[in-house]
Image (cartoon, rainbow over all chains, first blue to last red; front, side):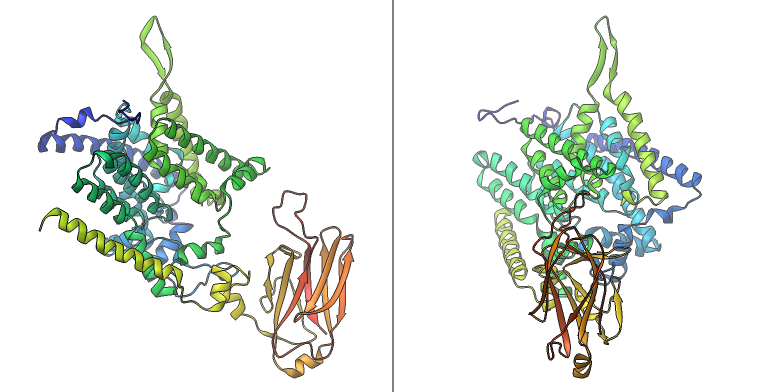
Length: 391
Length: 185
């Protein structure tokens, strides 16, 4: 409903009555079991595809996973050394994920590539659970099972299993935005602090935090205002520590950005890349450009709904990678919590109903979810086959 | 100590940390090669490529794949050639000693152009040639090098290409010269 200033405020009726501890544990336990079931379904699909291709789990650590393995095993490179120009180094790969994987490798006594895959999978499971909680706050009408299925079974769910940082990114963005939705600014800042050490765009969660803070500021009591400021200042903590380390190793605190030249990812006009992709003749860049356009339209829909916090996060998380080109855009788009949430909302809509038989209806998910699972299978097969476009 | 105290302490500590990181951002402590390649992007020769340059001898010929000479302002090596990027490109090479410099009397360049192109070539900032090519066929230029222009150590052949443009095949690069080989004779 709209408040006196015309803003859309979210009502948390289901949160107003604080459930007792035992009730909360049971409710969260049920959600976790739901997340676990979706996760296991995803794992079963992956396992059957690996078996049918006579491949094992080692194949899941490929492409960028190799770079993360380098960070986990040896830390950050002292000198660039890779690619034909000898200009690539692992500075582009943020530390939170490989450091967690290094801890998993040490605790479980497994190889680093396997630890990266296992760590991504653990984060994947937790991300499904966190997304359901996030959806309960920002879109309570979405059924929890559908929210879980959207994350666990979408075509790019592949990246939750392959030693990439996407699942950790989704987990901490969900936690940050969940806390923000409940106006817990310090908790949101703490989530943001980790997120800023996961991926370059993670630090931009400070924008939704500031927007929520500004909306809350006039009515907030002095202590709460302090918490808003503290939360905002917490967000860049992870990135700051990474930058200090990079400065010690390379002399350049922004080496993570400058080294992008080794991948020919030089920041430019995102709309230029978008238009070039749409006008181009290559089918895959055209598809990625189309997806980016859809994502920007979804951002517009979020703005239209006055969910400025979610809209601003997705706008930046879309435009920043798009400014360096279209390659890998799908995984940058479809692991964004706000876009997945909007997708879940659309999937829960009714497609067809019969006035004479109101108990019979066709919902969007009945058609979209099987297609999504098919896309998920296709992407896993493409990964196993070493197709370049999954990078 | 109450929550307010902790908030102020935390904010002060975080504020100092962020100011410190910002100051690090503004003053990188890196080599000139790193600065030129990664930060200001004044060169397309990476620091490693620069370190891999090896002194060349008159009479040796180098194709567009070589790592012995540096391609600054050139695109990646394709099967048959390497395109210049933009309106200026450089070939960087090392000469071992003054004797090698004195022995070399000609620059020999084999290349094609993207349609009609004006090509200005200079060596160590001294203009050597300006000519218009119609792009119809591959050319081999043999350019006389004035005495004492080549020097021991680093030498630079610069191509100025005022007519560089995007080709009509959807390639977004600004191209002019497709280099095939380079030598001193």
